[in-house]
Length: 114
Length: 113
Image 1 (tube, rainbow over the protein chains, first blue to last red):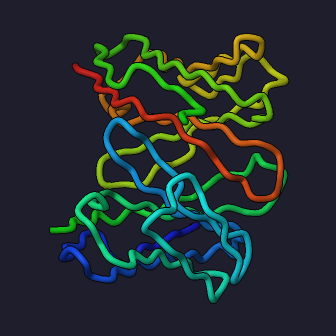
Image 2 (image 1 turned 135 degrees about the vertical axis):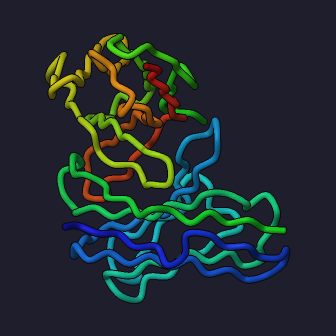
């Protein structure tokens, strides 16, 4: 069974802290993504990676960075957490292909910044 | 910039009724249109998908209708059941190896007995 695992379901962090969100997939997928999900705004792409050590900005990269040192692991970093980064964060992975492959999502990390 | 517009934001349907969710897109380079279903506490999961060379795709009670000229597509859930209560996202992606998917804003569906 395919699996994308996010390290935490719930996190509470203080403003200004550096926050790491970890994601691991066991499907040998080339592509990995980080989205944030907010009510009324849907899923917005923060960053994605199509290979180890490769990364591309998504639609809302400000305030975030990512790291992909191994194929199976994709980390999202909040350099200095702010209250407007309180959100649900979803990691996903997919095969590299012709554009019609399925994205597999983790269960999400609900981050609260206080 | 919202490239995929989805409506309604929420929907209440009686059991046995038809649920209809509509989406419109702007980017004519999109060539793959999946729908994802998300239950509370879970990540989204692929429900059904269509490519623009067909006007309709049906899988069980779920049907996608696609209108390429109008740049619109919709999800129809026939004989809606309480177990269909979830948030539904339409999405679109363009050709290429990255599979960057653009999602709509989501529709929260509640099917009442």
